[in-house]
Length: 173
Image 1 (cartoon, rainbow, N blue to C red):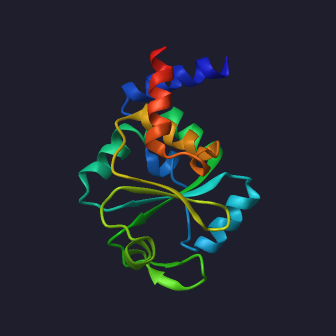
Image 2: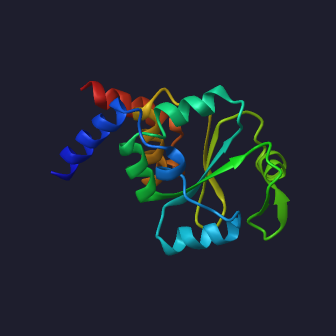
Image 3: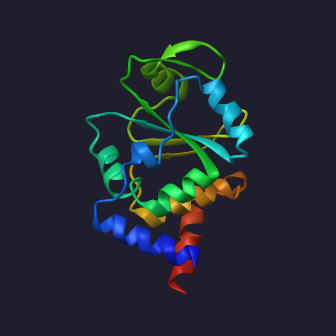
């Protein structure tokens, strides 16, 4: 019954253009990433996900308009991850995982080596990078596979491309 409701809700939201990702996908933050890790642990989330983006990025916009706005994506990711957005050109100060105050742009470029956008960077609850995806996914299904890849711990002994091929083969059967 719940799955059927989610599917109907997803179909209705898709027809209406989806749900605003800034309200239904990303969580509000005051920019203290040490605190975000604490919340990740307290909420028993699998990881902290940071979406590195910039205003002029067409692939970032595509992800927000076609994938991150979908209720099934929002529900899955909110269940398993704490999710934040960082502007790679941002001057807003944040507190990094080491407790230092830095600009968003420096956190992205210097500390996380973000050179293209979008970047989906997953960190374990201790702040260690565990998985990274650069660029836009092909759609909702691939993005859900990325979430499954991290949430179920497949990143520990597999790479995402291999995992994705396995999922594609399973979906054809």
